[in-house]
Amino acid sequence: MTPRAGIAAGAALALAGAVPWLVGPYGLTIALNAAMWVALTVSWSILGGTAAYISLGHVAFYGLGAYVVVTSWQVLPLVVAVPLGGLVAGAFALTIGWPVLRVRGPYFVILTLGIAELVKYAVLNVEAALGASSRLLFGVPDNRTLYLATLGLAVLAIIVAALVRRSRLGAGLVAVREDEVTAETIGVPIGRYKVFAFALSAVIPGMVGGLMALRSAYFEPLQVFNPVISFTIVTMAVVGGAADARGPILGALLLVVVSELLWANAPQGYMIALGVLLIGFVVFAPGGITGALARPRP
Amino acid sequence: MDLIASPQLLFSALVLGAGYALVGLGLNLVYGTMRLLNVGHGDLVMLGAYVAFWCFALTGLPPPLAAPLAAALGVLLAEALHRGLLHRLLGAGAERIEANSLLVFFGLSIIVQNLAALAFTASPRALRTLDDVVHVAGVAMTESRIVILLVALAVCGGVLIGLRATVWGLAIKAVIDNGRAAAVVGVDVPRVRRLALWAGFAIAGLAGALLAMVEQIGPFMGFPYTIAAFVVIILGGLGRLGGGVVAGLLLGFVQVYGVALTAPTFSSMLLYGTFVAVLLLRPQGLARAARIRS
Figure (cartoon, rainbow over the protein chains, first blue to last red):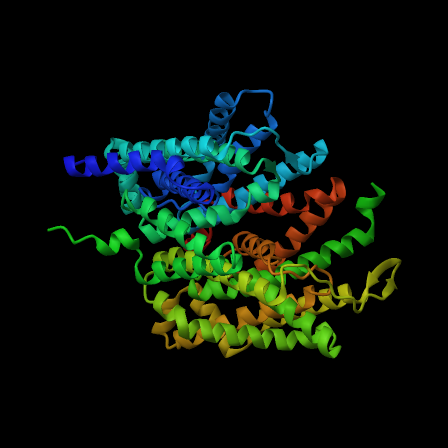
């Protein structure tokens, strides 16, 4: 990072941290949305951006984290429950990672979508068996606290993603994207790398899910495991350009603005706009905004 | 155990499986000839169901007669999509087509679902027609289910015979097996692909019009059918339309007997569980089947 970029990042962080004292309640909800989507999309890009293994099932991790926080409500303190949600999500990714990541390309994409639905219906069945179709949480933290915690996770996600990209692991994952068979041939431990990156990209979404369950103070499996969340993450990453470290941040912030313009008045209009953006970028600018802006290197 | 052995359950499984086979047949034609991973395939089923619903609600036309209209809508959409978007995708190699088409169709699927929600509201609807009960050999069947079973089997059978017995059918089979070789021996590959796309979309629309008689009709009803169609083509094998029909019936049996042994709430888990299991057992998806065949 150049000194100038470092100063810019520090200033942006200071500004983001001061948001609760600068804006009203409405502005704070937008900031909370922005922090949440940046955290989710950047985490997703740890595998999706480097190795181009596009997970359309990240909502499973988000939902599991939320479920851990909700079921342990008033049993565990939140400083334990939220990280535990992240660990459970990561452990789940680690468990399913070995078989799931053998599936390549587009089949991986639809497989993750199917797994997320499977997890959703499994949780629904567990909840039905427990006789709890929805749960209310009383005495949740206020939005200011939740925002600062989510912002912390967003910053953590950015740091982890940047460290991965610079590491041997990141180089190996990029090699997987370019040519998986060749990468394996020259000795990149692709299986281990992919599973580790998959688990890593699940931990923060699990914690974010826990925080968002506190935000709504309400838990309903169909809402928390809504595949729209996975779809939004992928669209944000594709729009920003997942191959570039800045792409997921840019895409998330941009779509949060679009969402604010459309969601309240025309929720279906927002979904249609997301679909149009996804198709437009895949067909006309597969590298996303950052890919289109980047000058070809000599 | 009485329940498991009952012919009533067998009939339910056959109807569900025939519906899946029909939906999967359409996807198989599109995927086989063009390598387009149409994750919006189930949304064509949804549109067909709405055609049947509105035909019945507005004019009293029974769904089996609205089915040709739903198929025609499928052809129109196929042609519009082909002209507007697909020609841009089809230029690339097979792997790129698969990866890009998946995200593009996912976007289209979201757009179509939400347009349907805007136009018809998100609340589910149901058709009450052809629900007289007929007793055949001690099994109570509604007329609508008999129609679904017969039409689905007739269409699947017709397509399978057509693929062997007509020039166009043989051309489609050739393109599925090896597009480049088919072009070398003089098959007009672009036209054959277009025909297959029309047929695939038409079959999905038709299936939707039939299934409207027994399913709740809503903008988001399509996705389970997409998943079922993928089970059918992955289990049945790339371009093996006959294998796909068997796989569709098998999925129907898994779901109906699975639910009979557990509880109705497990229905979705059985569908997605089968899907996940099938992909984990065939991690190369359809590619391996293709390699063996070529």
